[in-house]
Length: 258
Image 1: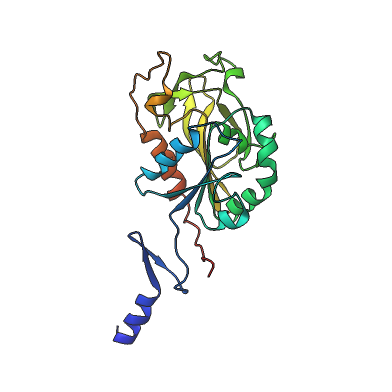
Image 2 (image 1 turned 120 degrees about the horizontal axis):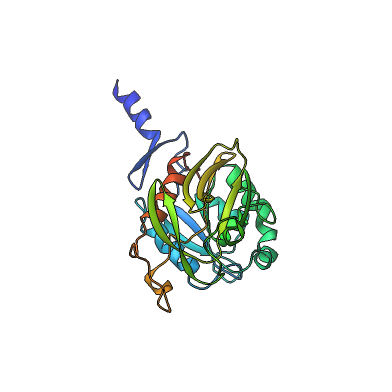
C-alpha cells in the first residue's frame, strides 16, 4: 500500500469513543446520546433511575432527558440526534397514552430507520398496540391478570423471574407480559414464574426494541415499607437488556446539523 492509498483509507475511518466507524463522509458520527423521557407519562424517580442505568452500562451513554417541561422536547429532530430512546415507568397506560399518542408516529419511524427503543414497565406497555406505539410483534397484557400469576397487588412488590436460565428477584409494580406471535424472531431474556414473557428484544425495521415488565433499574430507595430484594441491589439485568439491544444491530449513523 502506497502512502496516498494509506491516507485515503485512513480518512474514511472515524474514531468516536474508542469505536472506529467506516464512513465516506467525515461529518457522520456514531452518537452515544440516549434520550430518556421525563414528563406526565412517567413517575418521579423512574426517568432518573433509567438514566443512571444507561450511564453505568458497559459502553455508557450520554443521557439527555426529554419531555414537555425539559430543555429538549420530544420531537423528530431530538430523536434524530440520538441512538437510543428510553420510555421509563409511570402510571396507568390509558392516561399515559393521552400524552404519548402525539409522538407515536415519529417514534415508530425513528425506530424503523435504525433507532433503539427501551421500555421499562409502562414503557413496555407503550411498545404494544392497544394502545401503544406498535413496536412489538404482538401486544402486552397485565401480568397480575395472567393465568397462574402469583402477584395479586398493583402496589410495589417483588417478583421471581428466570433471566437467561438464572432465577432472579426483581422489583415489580403491575408490569406487563409480552404476548408475541409464535413465529416472531425475538430473543426472550426473561420469563415470569408462570412462563409468560417478562423481557424480550426484537427487531423493528432497521431498529431494535428491548422491553421489560419488572424494573431492573430499581434502586435501593425504591424498596420501602419493609420491602427487600434477597438478591441485593444489582443492575446487571438492566445492563444485559441494554447490551442485547445494542449488539443486535449496528447503531444508527447521525449527521449533525450545522
